[in-house]
Amino acid sequence: MKKQDLPQDESNLKSANMTEVLYVTDENDNYTTANSIGWDAKKAALDESMELIHERIEEARQNVANNLVSPIIYFMELNKMDLQVLAAYVGMWQWRVKRHAKPKVFKTLSQSVLKKYADAFDISVDELKNFDGK
Image (cartoon, rainbow, N blue to C red; front, top):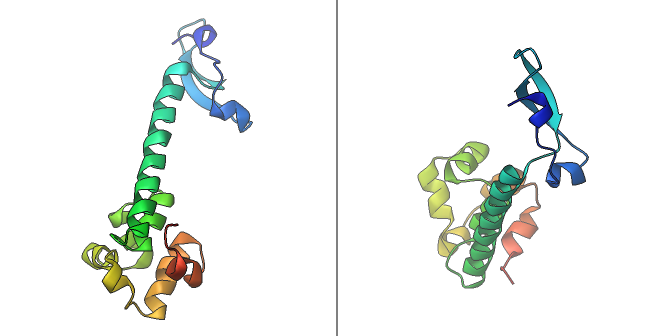
């Protein structure tokens, strides 16, 4: 893309006072970098991705409220994590984290295990234990 053709469409980057660095070609066809505040195609893709993330968070919240999963699932979605990432943060095997996602098992977790999850989510143990999805 030529430097003069670089899109400068409204996006979330502008509202956050940020720009994105992209590779472009200058007037001599040499590669260089230039700043962009966004472009419509990328904005549409990011908006759709964020909508999907919000839907997953809401679904997790409802599942906690209906006692189908433990609060671990809600906070995992809220923090844009998956089982593999969360397992790495808390230093446990994925199968253990998945097991802790069951409400009955979650209620039996020790304070030290709950603390690992709370630290990973940057919340207090009380917030984690008392989140009911409502």
